[in-house]
Length: 469
Ligand code: ARG
Image 1 (cartoon, rainbow, N blue to C red):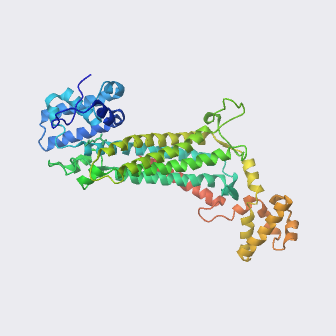
Image 2: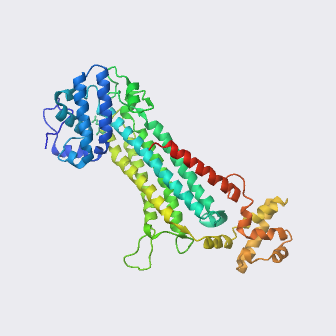
Image 3: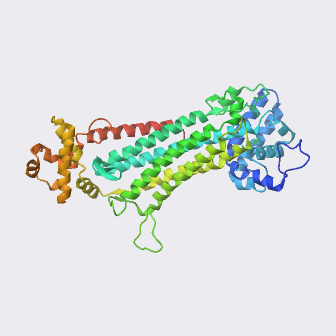
């Protein structure tokens, strides 16, 4: 085991206690930033060469050392074995010392870990944002394929969890596609705010060396450079922006999960989950439980917990950097893992799930979901909507009292109930008929849904193209 490197110490007569060292160490989690730290350090070495702090030999030695650490990082457990540094930044510098000798003493010239940690997280996070965006695209693809498997299926749509109006199955799935497309857009917007170079800000007051920050930004593929060094040291907005976007995606996933838990229950009975994503009971032999969906629903709380955890940590912190801010990484890492795994899990559930279209349609035919269709048909014929609403309401009341389903009414019986219900209206007792009137864009009319499906598929192709691999 080599002596741990401390990036400070000159001012101290005594070392830190063992307890404080253990308490403050972040290496066991921030080692996830190793590749980013190496990449950022290479760019910083290049910048130091350009301003003449490093000569060619020193630069070459440092670069070779960083290269070697990069190769060693393929076996991270071995690299970390016995490492007692405070954080990943100190670890990399100790290793550079080991491999580059004296030249390494200049690698941290004018650089602060405050800007370095911001740089590392930004480099790491922008890649994970892209991975998350890919996860969303995969889920969208699975939802669209699920829609294509049952293009004409009719299901009950709910408000207040009471049957409300019938909709096409693809229309229902497209609602979630819209949510996940917004999540993708939100992540894309967050990525733009993450993708700004903080390096060259020093601890808080700016770099004391004439670094060409634009050149560093170009080298590290950042779109621009930050404009205030104090803001850089103090800022974790970009982490919270991601946590907000991830929470929103997790929230959408939780609602999808809840719907499908209900729809696949015996009580609803019109969806079936595959064996691959369900579990049995240790006691009750008949059980087929939707655990995958319950976990997706549950993990939303965890992602949102990460968001509120960091939010509360940051609230009221005095400018600029405070060590509290080290508490950003564990929630961030956990949220990234959780949202990506949940997206993948939902994708697998969607791929294996099946619909029982006849049962869904029967449910849509039963509960007077056609009442609005009837009232609107009367209105189209000039009958005031309120009066039509009342009339259909009375028809529903009578049916409920007699235990009669909509499709059990004959055209003659309808007419006898009220002359306004002429023969042409009887066909509206089947939900498929009324649906045909809902062709305004965004509605569940078959034509509108066909167009929305095509538009969503086209936008998915564009999203895939715009997400770097
Ligand atoms: N591990 C620290 C963090 O994540 C790195 C920055 C340390 N800076 C400092 N001034 N102690 O925030």
